[in-house]
Image (tube, rainbow, N blue to C red):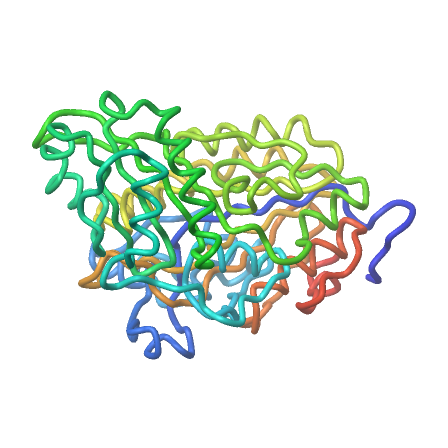
Length: 397
């Protein structure tokens, strides 16, 4: 179907469900990123002796990689394929931005040896607190390591990862949330001078030996360098609702409404709630637990349980879809919990398209996440994106 910018668009609503970190292996450049053999879905299935995901199987998930217990469906209910990432990096921002039409040509900087004095000195001055850590670390591990000292001194725990992130952890009883968020806003201004992708507030609670991160996390992202799919849709008069950390990832740009979620279960609940109120436009959902709770912690059984929970929820979601709706299940990167590290992995990500009127068809491996955004722009009557090839004709009945 041709892109329409006036009149009634071909479809009424689009929903993107981002299963954060759920890759399906097979990235052509995985070895360049040190991720040869990474395959989040395939490796989890092998590690647990097989997955049971009947609803995802029926949508075509088994066609994407070898998933023990999830064979290729003979006649999938939807269209199936995978997205290859064109951007440099394997970060949350680059993945989501690319879905929305922006390819990151030059990787955002990382800090494997900690942040330089130009950053730490400015951060100490802005926070009026000392800093602990300043190294690459697992978030849960560094809180366990430095939490007791943080409780004693009030100094902030500063750390990073293999991604372009500056993370600040603090106990909610030592650094009130309002103060932590203010510090992270100041850190965002410092990070802008160094093109760091995200500043993340990582509040936690509990006592030594039993620290626990909370869902009061906030991400402060680099502002997208150009208009995204979200901006194009709003300009076309469509509503854009973000669930989870979508607003954080896009620095609040191009969103009509934003709903903060506290994990997957809450995000799935909010998805159904938001869908019931959306008339025309995009519902953009991030399900963070796959990545935050299981991928980064190498928790294979937990990851498998979360996949089963998503699968069990899908029938209720599909029942809420109406004619003129199209849903896409995808991911922003991989996070294979069977690999030795705790960071994201460079992988292809699933592309499952389904809903009333969606024609079952193979979509192959797309060369860019931008193809998803271009398809939605065409489906909802927005201006075309600068990158990406629409597959709307393929899935339109």
